[in-house]
Image (tube, rainbow, N blue to C red; front, top):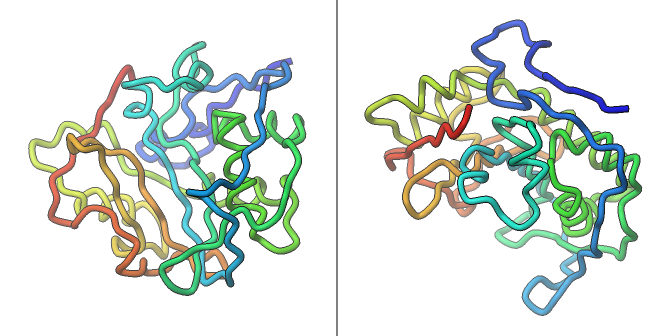
Length: 235
């Protein structure tokens, strides 16, 4: 049995609806997943948590140049706006915790339940192994329930209209997103782009209570004055 999600139908304001899951049929077949392990370049790092980052990806841009593990996200009739990259614990300073404890392959019921938010089982394994294992007391189910709850709470401006503006800056985009979300301001997120200036991701900063918070200066992202373009794809 397939579960079809048209998430924005639940939103009160239609103009805020078109940026999350537009249509997604979650597969019931077993998803192939490889272990995701620390390495020399990505070592175990156990540090205190100072806050969190909720990272969301602009799917039309991701699917513009499909990656190896992208058929579910970029084909098969599924259509996405912003997808959930992950919930990342941040450190107190510039370094962050990662790969804090060994973990098994994700349970398939957890993957099926959340794959229409993060449309890659392998990415889900990576997010849990690298980030979720650093959150004390969290299981895979709790981690993805937490991250998905934060993701589904987000509201978005009319991305189609923004993409058609002749001059759009990262600050304009951040202000538009903030205006759609109570308690959020433009300095509570970082906008990232490809080398060619196309919207890639938005990183939303959260405090230890998972409330929107001003981003630290070291977190990076585009300057508010940087021009940015939004790829609409087949949307």
